[in-house]
Image 1 (spheres, protein in one colour):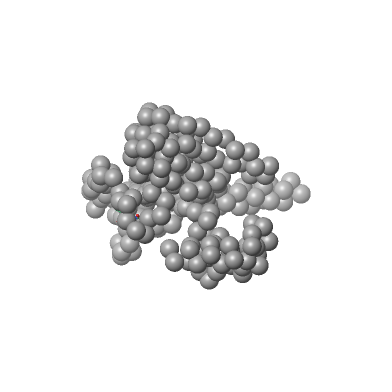
Image 2 (tube, rainbow, N blue to C red):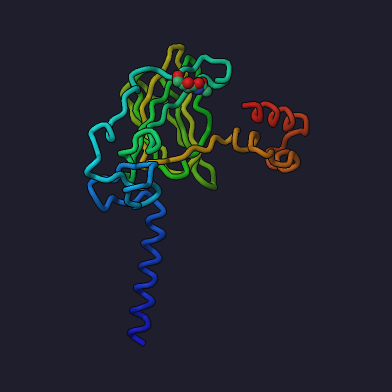
Length: 224
Ligand SMILES: *[C@@H]1O[C@H](CO)[C@@H](O)[C@H](O)[C@H]1NC(C)=O
């Protein structure tokens, strides 16, 4: 009996650790530079690792966050633009559970309500004044704050949050996220702009909107 429950415990622990590795795991080696060409590569998680003897300093390097991203083009309706340096951009991030973003805002630009399904976000304002906030899971309490240069705010994993430039100058912020691939779900785009579209009756009832408004929103977000 004892033997059986020991085995069951071992099996449960094995199962638990396989669940745990569904999150970005603690690294089991110094690094695992991601590689797309799988010849002569080792598989660790998510991506294959580049042969460590072939790894070079540039595998850990990215240049380009000195320049603001474009916020003024016609396709940009919110006046903000996020440049994310994740594992797809910086292969050396593979298995390390971290990434970085630069956020640019024109005057009154908005990073609209969104979720990072796999990452907590730690933001620091470099220029300008941002109104930021996040909303908890039910019951939906808003935590909000006005941030100036040098101020830091944390957005817990999986919660809806936003950043709004309330100044009449450009704003710049940087964010660290504790995932090599935090992901992003922009609420309005996901709900009104999915492909194929969600049945309008679902959205009419969910958001308590008139049919015409839902049709307008679907048209607006589908064309993005
Ligand atoms: C964001 O900035 C990049 C780089 O400037 C630009 O190529 C891209 O079109 C911009 N995206 C939007 C939605 O403005």
